[in-house]
Amino acid sequence: MNYYDTFILIADDSPVRRSKIPESNRKKQTIAEIEYELLKEKPGYYTQDELQFKVHMKHKEIPEVNRDEELVHFLEKSRACMRASALSKRLGWGIYFDSDGKAELVPVESKRYRDLQERNDIKRFKAMKSKK
Image (cartoon, rainbow, N blue to C red; front, side, top):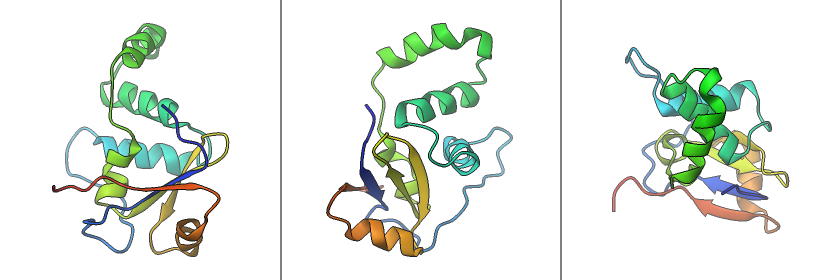
């Protein structure tokens, strides 16, 4: 399930008002760290499905030789959308998907965030709240 012409705003209960780079002291990168790294390296490159699969492969340390087989299993399973990402729930990053479904990060404190928030020609959704 990919988004097109859609902006995911930070969650209403986000604890930050300025974007934060995800970082942990874990040996293995967190999903948010991988998402951030990929979207910062290549803004406007990944669709939601492509990004989530790349994150899955990297997070689970699955070798590229198993890519095709893993993709079949990955697509068969249901998964949360990017509205559930820690980037937009807790770390202050909006996620904009253009007309081709390609994603880019938008810091909450930026003019671009405010501009996208006001646009009526795109869909806008809030990230999911951390607490009910």
